[in-house]
Length: 628
Image 1 (tube, rainbow, N blue to C red):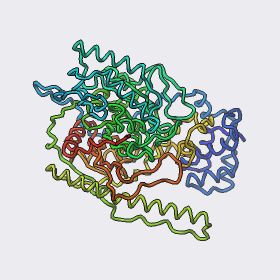
Image 2 (tube, rainbow, N blue to C red):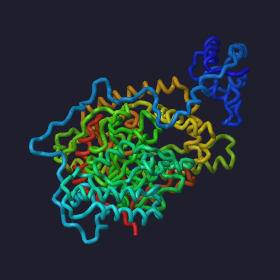
Image 3 (cartoon, rainbow, N blue to C red):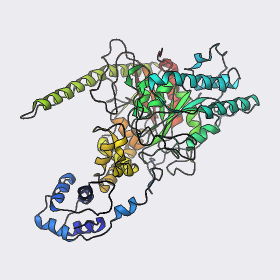
Image 4 (spheres, one colour):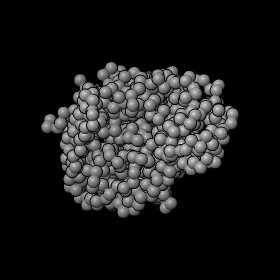
């Protein structure tokens, strides 16, 4: 009996099966059993009583009687099916669903324009110091520092661009952070910037500053590979909105930088991007090249993206300052879609102030990305940060008070199973020991905040099942790359382990639509509850990783990741993973640690102002790796 999905749903209802999970799972099982060739769509799937039993186990319903199963099968008739009709549309990755996520709770956040202080502009360059005799001495300079020199015409954009291009070429064999150099475009932009500045037409602090783009941003005339095998020659005929806006600000695009394949990890079709502080390690991801190139002094700033940690993680590993904006602040037009309700574009820089200068240039509606809210961002480096109320998640910072329990042996455990269990326990022990060390560094950062005169208010992250809500990301990602899975082209991706995208996409196809909606309803509670915290405080200090990372990516709140120093010679040794999956080794002496500052929706300017104050008091952001 061939299967029509719509009629199958009706048959399930008539058979008294109320669970919304089973029909979708059963249809998928039947389709897979029928089609051994994923490209063969000529025959509709068939169903058997045994498949109903299998689907019931996956759906967590049943068991069903033989009579019920026969009633379901008897209710099915031949039909093409809605799945096939939609698949024939060949929807490109750029087509978003008809629903739009807006993270604002019922009581909207204040997104009004900030008042203009009479006689003051949003940004004025510092008094420029004399340019060094060797321009490469500016490789690790801040955007604001470079802007002062460029505006005063003490250096040229062309000389700066040539210096960064040379460093990209020199260190790419060691760090693997470049997919495509945009050299011809960059040199033309730099010459144009110098001519405009000489003529008195200064566009602002990004004018003439070389930058790098995560290679999920479309740039006309160059490949946009998404870091993935099978997409190496993909190209688009229009620049992404963020690229257009940085062009308008006078910034100079020097390179398209690596990302883990389809925005996971630091492993891409050309290898693994490396951490400049320890080149035996990956840079983390998925904004792997953006973070590595900034940390290595090979671009003035970079654009990354985050769906669930892709700015936070590499910024931490590479010792950068990363700003994950409020969801709906920066348009994603022309960027690869992974999760339409979670993707965010943001700057990775050498300081919080640099992040603010970049965000000011790229935020705001473009008339195409309907998720973008018309909120204001006006950078004021002299903002009185001491007026802010500062909280901290008391359970997230510092050494863990509870050691994880080791996995116990199972009855009749085979020798191989025993070794695998012991290896997992040993790895968990290493991570716990490393976390204890990093936790002490977090407490030192809290002490520094208190020394700045801050009265830290203890807060708690709302106790919702954040991890259980997060699979909606995987469901959206599986839809975004539906054709990749069905065509079998997912085998071209570099990673093929359990945690890599091919397996995740296949598994996510069994995630029921009703459960996706239920997860989003739980997400609404999360938005409300975390937003309520920001009625009591303006900024929350927290560890970068852990439940808050998942929670705030789901709720769309902005985050600023800042370095808090390097692990000392007494730190635990680096952790080396035994597999070659999307994530590689981490930690060890001489590598960076971070904390994160959070703020309410569209309060990104306050977030950056507080981050600037912290960095002025600590100067951890001025540390940089020795590459030679």
